[in-house]
Image (tube, rainbow, N blue to C red; front, side, top):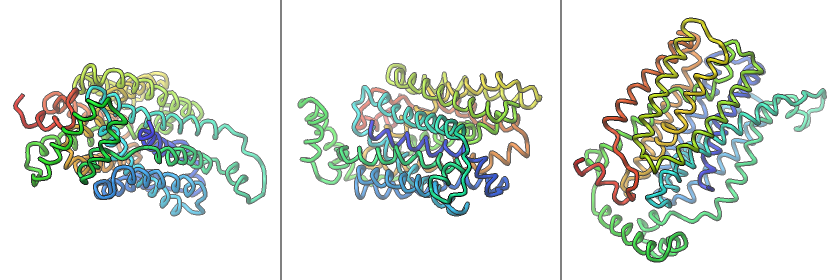
Length: 446
């Protein structure tokens, strides 16, 4: 649960901008391009964070890397609260993005490396649940803060600044979970799998025996050691079937998770609902409803990921995603956009994403690679995820203005339809296998 807090900060950091954006835009007179840059600057930081995590995690270990990510969150929360210019705000958004990028690689990987095979899907899904909880917390926090009385004062104190410019308070709230995350991480042990790759078998043994019954711990220790010895003699390239196919699967799932439009709705939800004549106040409330549904249906994934398998959840979820996006696009294209109907369709989209594409993408990416290349391969997949996320964050406002909401939703629908056929025909089932058995899933004939 401590590792999953990285997901909570990930969700909070990406969603808090939705409530603060219009206030910042008005105060700093941002045009559409600068609005997109303010949102996507955090995503650019994520890409940087992912790139350095691949190097750091193998060199200094999983624990020190996630501690560094937690520190980045705290610096960003404080820095984004008190900038004197939009350039400073973008800089600290970039710093927060680096933390998010690092956590998005290392948090679910740490969970995967500690979890037992029969519960690994559920355990990694807790990371996605934490993301949705962070998003919901940001929405509720934004609604509460925006509803506080403005106050009248000429004082230049920090307290007065937070009252007069509420977007600063919205960012500052993130410091609370950041401090909690940082403190709790000191009690988390290092990954036994990483320790064994560094020849620290005794330390790994102590940690495994703390986590498992003695017989199971000994058996797992032997399996990890054997796999590490075998992998240390191999010179892997992307052409190796044990890496090439899962790498393709991971990249495609990561990119099309973002091209479903999920983060466009998270970042710009109030703007979408306002365009459906929901009114600014109702738009914020609708956004909070979306956050609650996101959390509830992620719990469905936790209950079912190990029972029904990864592919079944992808099939069911993508069916609902495609239907809701095509229908929503039709409503906006025709100009018939009753707020309740638009909300219902987007709720269907969020629900289907939350029990399928959201958690299952993270589960598969973090469990299908051999230990010796896991952090590098996961970093590559996650980097593509954040690049796709950045593209959506940067160009979604432009798409809304240039081609309209209808065609924009249809673009997301077509991307999700491609993902549906890819998931049915190419993605391999990974549930119930140990991390050391995973190579057989992709190399052995099925």
